[in-house]
Image (cartoon, rainbow, N blue to C red):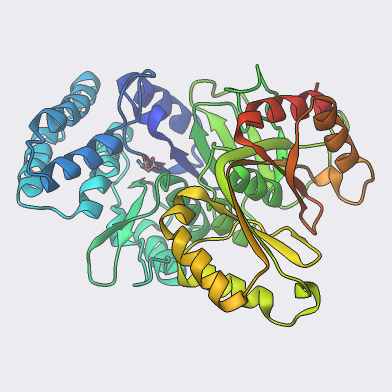
Length: 438
Ligand code: ASP
């Protein structure tokens, strides 16, 4: 039996959290592989070490001293080492790092050092070997992970043993360190679990599983006890923030269950995610699994007489977005018109170029761009092939006077997406939660 555990930033924030982690790991001999994030916030106004490292890099670039920021990083790690009585020479590690930053250490490696330092400390504290991510997590030149090579190497290094592994980074074919996107330690954990064919991937964070809605918007939302990989993917993509949205892929490929747990409440079962499962008889008969959303989308609507029957127009439109490196999140369409929903931050810098190309190539009758849109996803495996969900959504929003700007239902009927003005975002989430969950 093998369990791969990943501990997030708040779980790694100070010595008290390290003690909780040791209790969790030592309570089960199957818990042999531990992937760690950089130290996160201890309290709400605190700083994450990764953010401080990005700041050091920015200061270096602008020729401003980064010493005071780096001192905060030193204090945090030396404090943890002293508090736990660790022998590792963390001061020398930090001084070498300071010198390397001064000498122009590249950004990717610089910002990865939070995970590196965390892993060194945790390895000694647990008495597990430190296995550097640069020795097994290999990227291709295009930034995707070389899974085959990485998995084989990790298996070779770890065998049946134990290890503490830093999350968030790996190595490029030229030997340079490269990071995943922010929050990427979740992916490192999933890759390690897949590489070692773990029985379960436990992702330890500071909430007792995924909640049915954002707790900043809805008071005390219920936790989700069980979800399928597809539901988790849809919730994460729609904006649920517990896990990095790409976490699910490596474990799903291997059919490894994913258990989201709370370091501060280790007895809580959290959320269990798998391909499918029998609904427990005593399960709460809730119709939906969760609600998640994101703000700051723009909708580009292109209308042209006869477009509905024309061959290739959609491809030409999509190519224009592609040429401008603007990702398209959703494409609701009508007769002779199609809308492309994009993150505003990605569209805005290229807006003139995109609209100009659309005018030239597509010759539309009209192009309309609307900003400040929020997209909310209502996700649930029980919605599929059952009548009434969309009716309930529209009735609930209509009763509250919320105007729906866009609707899209996934063909798998696992989610229904509604776009609203961002001013209505929080209210929409509350109305939907009350309609389906309360
Ligand atoms: N430390 C990195 C971040 O803050 C990665 C992680 O914690 O997953 O994004």
